[in-house]
Every structure is written in structure tokens, then in C-alpha cells.
Image 1 (cartoon, rainbow, N blue to C red):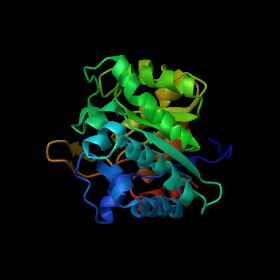
Image 2: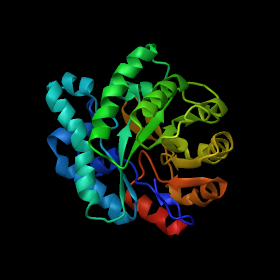
Image 3: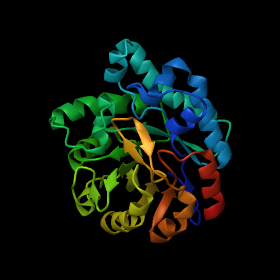
Length: 290
């Protein structure tokens, strides 16, 4: 993931909240992936809004896109595979309007497919074989669509991380790898010192965290750099909490511009936002760090 030596790479923000702000109801199990089928032009519009705000990277609408999930929604396997690949195509077509920008194909955790909040807990109670059979074909579909890199993100559990890292090794496509965390542990409760040691394959160009509280970022970045010796990536939420029962965000928060300079000083090279962070927040982030 190329960057100038003296400049951070600015990522985009949350796709789902930007789509909701445009009037879309994403309350079903497919979440933002539903619009790959129902309104792909709106997905493209959000990618464009983030690029216009100054983001260098657009993250595709594939976080919650899986063959299993689409089939449950009545989509055939062949059509589901086309929709997953289309997430990259849509982003690439918008990227071509902005020379020098990148597309990262989102690879969400197994728990996102369950659509029951499991991605915030990990420890799904399934074998590594089940995780491999779920992630492997989807990774191949996304890689075949030729993104600039993969965004393996919101991983709550070192058990899932180990499966994903081995698949990345076999696939040989550049990727960033980010955990969802709570304090100094993964969401599943494993120490970050152990978690950041796992994505050690050459394909992983940056290691860090996303979909967490902004207050958790700075110590996590320091740990990621110390353990991995690699560039760190950080893109937290605005600070609200997700209520999986009511399926809504609660509380107050602030955008990444408030904290980003301290993250960069600690060793982050890639910064942006996740849930509830929108184009205006990314525009403010660009101003704050440049």
C-alpha cells in the first residue's frame, strides 16, 4: 500500500452510516451489502464522496457480503458470487475518476455473516475448518476482482486471525489486518501482544485496529508497532456503542481528526474511521494531519 514517506495514508469512513445518511434502511441481515444488489449506484456515490473528502482509499461494500448470506436472502450462488465481485468493480470504477487512489476489498469476520453481533464477541464455537471454508472462497472472489489490496478488518478473535493469515499466505495478495478490540485485548479477550504477533506474513503490509473506541487506539497502535515492527493502521468508530438488540448506535462521540496526530506520532501510517465516521469527518481528518 504505497505512501509518501512523510505523509500518512488517509482511509475512508463508515460505508453503512454514509448510506443511511442518504436515506437507506440497512436493518436487514445483508446490511450495506444489500445495496450491491438493490442500488449499486448509491454505493458508488458514497465511495465518490469519500474520495472527494480527501480519502486515499475506498473500502468496498463486501464486509457483510458472503455467498451464504446472499443465498439466505434468495440470491442464487452464481449471482451471489457476481455481487461479491461487483463490490470491487464498483469501487474501481469510481477510483478511476481519482488518479492515485486505491481500493481495499473489505473482508469482514465470520460473525458479520451471522448478523447477530457475534463479530463483537468472537469465539463462535465453530472449527477452524468451518472458518477456512467460509473465508477461503470469498477471499478468492475478491482477489480475482483485482482490488489494490484486501482489508481484513474487525477481526475479534486470534483463532479466526490464524485461519485468515494462512489464507493470505496462500493467496499472495497484499492486505492490511485489523482487529476489533476492547482496551488491551481483542473482543474475544486475547491480549493484543499475542494478537499482533499473528499477522506476520509478508502479505500483510499494516497491522492495527478498527471498529473500536477512539480512546483505545493510542495504546493499541504502540503495541502493534512494538510487537509487529510494521506500519500500524487505525480507524476507530466515533465512540458510540452498538446495541445489537435495538440495532442502533447509542451515546456520543467524535471524529478521528481529534486524535489522529497522536496516533501518527505513535507509529500509525494509515488512519481513517469506521462506524459513524462520515465524509465530513474524513475531510476534517485530512485538514488535521496535513
